[in-house]
Structures are given as structure tokens and as C-alpha cells.
Length: 494
Image (cartoon, rainbow, N blue to C red):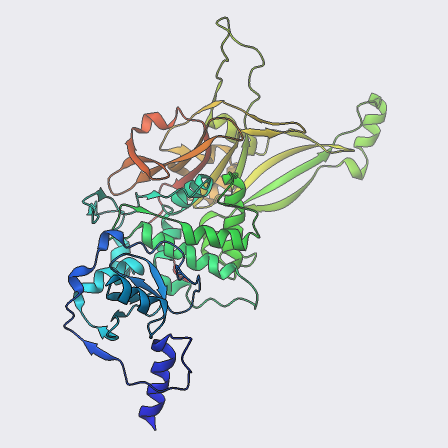
């Protein structure tokens, strides 16, 4: 009886032939260690980055990869697409993309051979804690199947059509140590349960897969396609972010971090998810209503004494800081060329010192607001607001920011009592996202610090080049990630 149940289960898992009745019992699959077709496998054409569906029927059920041509087909039983492909093309070695088991068709026996383990690893890379601990210490150069040399973590991302705004964010986040280390270990999030109908758990799984592929030291090629990751983004954002039209990386980053936090069952508590542990800071937002402009001085004094015009504040958490640039000059210089203004990073950060005020206008009322930082996160995401939108067009501010790469003391903008609570307030630049070109037609690239070598690399889609750190400060920075100088590479996995 036990044997019969096992055979029925084998039929259910491995026959994969929709045209035959499911109740039919087959002989158990034969395992073989001697397959004459292993030398026909072509690793240079294998690409497991794309959506795992049959290239003929477009189904996602029981999909097999042909290891000779790299195409995906459904099934393994007679008259299935994989079976017909093996007979028609003479391709015999297939991999079940779900169970990671190898088969020879049309003979239909399972192949057991340790020489195929590298293919399994490329499809599903895994990392042990010991491997993760040395990622930022060991400068390991890997070789792809075509002979291309690459460093794990510093690999290009394919631009499918207009998804470079997503690529730069994903590349930058992949070098944030706590986030990277958390997602490299699938055990940290594989058991997360979400309410029925919540698709955001797919976002967690796909981001984890992408991080593991970016840091895989045994890739067959020196680049990665974020196809499945971006499909999850389109699905979970309800098509707000597309891969066919340019988007704003700031909007994407904000949505992505909040969606990951919720998908990881995060709450309002600062330690409820790896996202909040890494990026969450806090500030006080002081706000005061401004009297009407047409009021007399006497009326203004009287209004300022009322409760409505008393300054109030609210405690507000933040995942990133948005810094305003000074307005660009309206006139050209004597050579009829636009003057490119410059501003210091410390000038931009001064708007968060709790003293500097700024006026904010609404339809009816005007407010004076000032921002006071009360807690700095381990990693500070700084958004430099380059784009101004009005009724007619989007305008870009070309101001260049002067900043050091290392040793920026954010403690200078903290009050004395708040600074005393922080152990270290010095930060080093980790990632720098740049916008080039016109506001609506431009492109994005990212500068990344490779910690094992201390070198900076510029990545724009598939192109990866080493860059001098002095060149980074000359770019039109849009998003920056700053790392606390004393942050250890160890990360809590809870």
C-alpha cells in the first residue's frame, strides 16, 4: 500500500503531462549516475533571471529548463512541450526549476551527478554566515563562463526598457550592510506569513533573490537581470512603477522601503523590521501659523497672543531626509552661459538644526516650520530636491554640492542634549545616485563604495567602471546614503 501511494505521488510531481489521466500509476523514476548527454550542456546560454514560464504555453506549472539551449518548457511526460522539444531538437538534459532535479528526456530518468551542482547554485545561490562575514574583507574576483572577470556585488543590472531609476536604487541598497546580510540569508524571511491576498511577500522573496544573485561569486555571466524583481514591483505597486516608462527613484525608494517594512510584518516600533533598524530616524517638526499679510502690526501682535498662533511641534519618524537646494541664478554670465552654482553640504544640512525656519504656503494659510533631529539612524538617506514641479513643466536645479567623501559630522546640526545621547555622529558616503540630462528625459547612474578594496565604482545599467572619488563630488547628486563610521558589519538577524 505504501509503495502504491509513493507511485501516485511520483505521478503527481513528475509526470507533468496534462493530457494523461492523473489516476494512472507509473513506474518509479529511475535514477542514473551515468548520462551520456552531460557534455551537451551549454552553460553560456543558461539564464535563470527571467520569469520561469513555458516558452510555448506560458504556464508557470512544472517548468523545465533545457540545459542545451536555455529555453523553458512545461512537463516531462509524453506529448508535453519539454518532451517534444527533446525529440525534435535532440536536446536531452533538463532541470526542474522548482525542485532543482535534473532529468534526461525522452528516456525520462533522473540524473544524479555532482558536476551539475554549479547550475543549481546559479539558480538558487545560498550563503552561510561565515561567507557573509568576509564579504567586506576579502577582495575576491570571480570569472564568468565567457572569461569576464567581476567582483561579487559590483555587477551590472540589465535595463529592460526604462527601469534605470529602479536599478540605481536596488544597486545602492544592495551595499547597505545590514540589509544585504539580512536578505542573503533566506532563512530570515522564508517563513513570513501575510494575510490572504497580500502580494507584498513576493517583493521580499524577489528582493532576496536579487541580492543573492548580485553577490553570487559563481555567476555564469558578469551581469544580472532584475526582470522578476521588477515584475514584483509592478504587481505590488499596482502599476504605479513601470519598467517601460521613466520614474523617480526617490518615489520608488520611499514606496519600496515602506512596502518591504510592511511585508516583513513591521509595525511602528523602531526595531520591528530590518528596514526600520537600518534607516529609521526621528525629528521634531515645529510649526507656527503666520498672520495674514494685510493685517496691521497691532492686529498681528494680537493674533500672535492667541492659541492658534502659538508654535507647536510633533514627533515624526523619517526614513530619509529631503534637503532643499538654493534657487539657481536667473541670469547668465558675461559669456552668455548659465552659471552653475555651488553649495556646501553643511549648508543644506543646516535646515535640520532646529533653528533655521522655512515658510510653507498652503491654499489659505502660511506656516513657518523648523526641523530638529532627535535621533540619527545607522544609515542616513539624503534626498537632494533637484526637481520643481509646477502647472506647466518640471524644472531641474543644476546646483553642484560640495561634500567630503568621509568624516561628515551630522552632530553639528544636533542640539547639545541630543548629541550627548549619540555615541558616534560621523558618517561616510556609501552610495551616490546621480541624475544626468533633462528633467523628464534624463538617465540615472550610481556610485558605490566597494568596501573590500576601498575603491569606488560607477554603475549605469550594464556598465561598471572604476571611478576616482574626487569625480563623485562634481556630479549632480540626487540621492545619497551615508553610513555611520563605527557601524559593525555584524547585523541582528531577528
